[in-house]
Image (cartoon, rainbow, N blue to C red; front, side, top):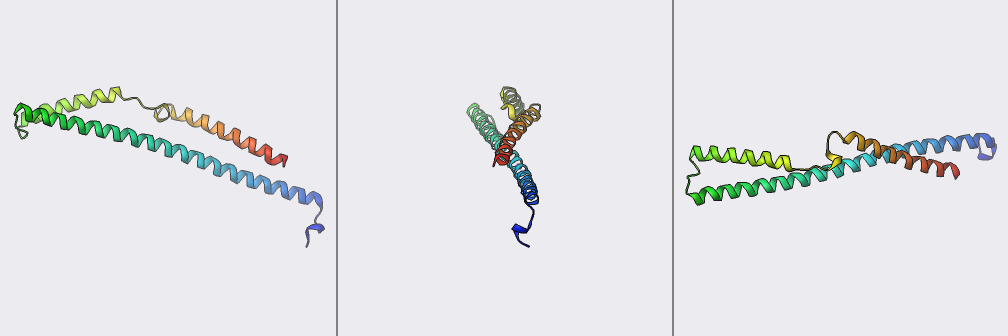
Length: 135
């Protein structure tokens, strides 16, 4: 059977359905790619925060060790170790209060940010669909 043997209305309907299937697949893949990109961005940001926190903790531990050595205390002394642990815990608690996370990483705003991004993707997809229909 040749294309000239198929009625033009059937050809138009076939092209329309094919376009809708391609658009649907493209929309799904675009949304998935967008979500993966956001996830990657959040993971990288979290990694940077963890690196900074780890560096700060290492620096604080080194400074506390130097203080102990300067004061002539024995690092193996249990009282000194307990006092240092208490001081370290207080410092970590103070640092946690000072840390400021970006809004996209805050657990309460994640849903709102995701809805906004989904709306942006939907608007992009509608624009693409409009262009596809025009062609």
